[in-house]
Image 1 (cartoon, rainbow, N blue to C red):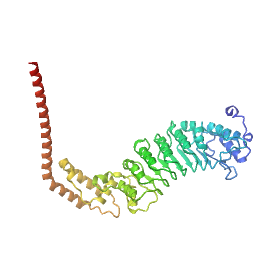
Image 2 (image 1 turned 45 degrees about the vertical axis):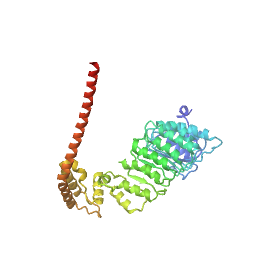
Image 3 (image 1 turned 135 degrees about the vertical axis):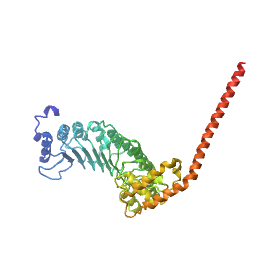
Image 4 (image 1 turned 120 degrees about the horizontal axis):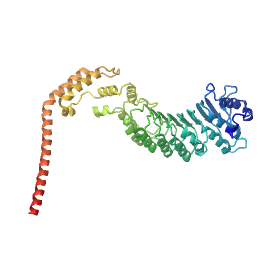
Length: 422
């Protein structure tokens, strides 16, 4: 119907409100110079030609608005604000929304889709928008804030997100929606197919241990390259932190993790501190997380210093500084098996460290440390070198003994078989 009448239909016959008519004319013109955003809500915020908010009048105007949105090549943002999805002008919700979303489903230009302060009909909105989620190549930003869906509704959202052929999401914002831990697992799993996803904001929900386990899987094993994760105001406790730690340790791209207003105790924060700088050994310090730069609004001075250090550009330099800050004496014993190959590598490491700008509170003492390590190595090398060589020879002898025993057993077997034939 809309396609056949598109050329002849007059905006005056579609809508009665002047602001709505202005928006419909812009949408119908499909001109790149017109505004690239559209707000749909229950009342106009302002009057005049610059107004960008559309107030639904009924099934007729919403059907045409959806059609024009579907034909638009330049609409960038489609934003629903506190829209009450109740019968409009005598038409049922289905009569108003189904033709509207049927048109929206044809759009290939929307970059931002946002719902704020709405009842989304138990997720039926996402069922109606299924083809849009599946086929739109430009959808990069999905925002759902202060909305009501229920567990079944969040499952429908998960299905919509997971159906994307173009896998184009870069930013997802689900704020203050009271999403349960179980529903959040479904959503996080559906996001794992989106390789461009860099920002995930999950403020104000009910994420707990299961949700943290799903996030850990997302960080470790999916194709996403998440840089920012906001988990403020959830139900995360120390058990949830334990679930996240393996992923945080191996993640080389996450820069911001906000954990304000959760149930994390001092133990949980200590574990996070150890993640950022494990001082149990030089190797453990080297393998610590050197990319995480933000943990939200925290007051722990030690954590703040480490996070500030992680803001430096090069991870290997960050690791060097952490090692110099936390290890006064370098135990050279583990390197003796490398024999003399390790000595020039050690000297090069200290020379590189001497060229790194150090924090004000760090006195590296590179020269004395280098001399001390060389002295340790030279003093300990003769005896330990002999011990190492003798141990290697002993292992070689054990191998020969094993081979000899096998040969003897094989010999006896052959002789027994020969005796039986004779």
